[in-house]
Image 1 (tube, rainbow, N blue to C red):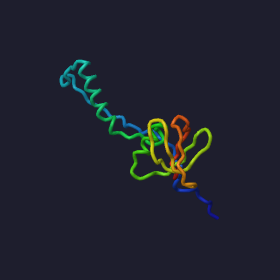
Image 2: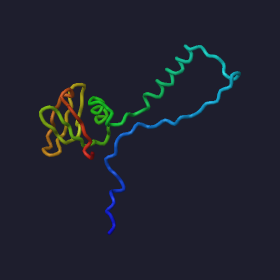
Image 3: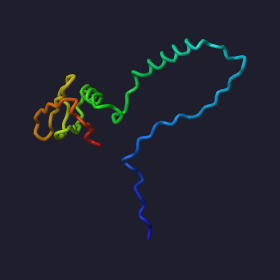
Image 4: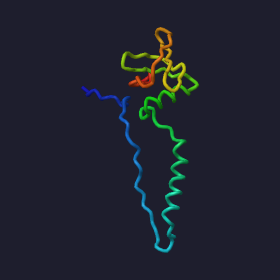
Length: 127
């Protein structure tokens, strides 16, 4: 008899940090021109500030406020599970201001108002 094999694809995979390859640089003594350190720092700050706004963090790395802002700005409503200290609701964000979130409950079709400070966790419905 053959041994039963395990699944070939594991759905819940751990989150790994991307590995940066180690590259070698060849430098010749006469080819490098010395640059003042202030100019190098200013150039580095310019490149960092230019790349930062374009990068979107993964959903699991966002904070609660960032998740609410991200979900509120989506054109298509995304069903989520909102957990706070008293209870939890599965639904979509109907509207949002700086302090409160209005969540449309999928079961009762009622709007629930929740302060952002009380929200403990937001999970996407499919996960």
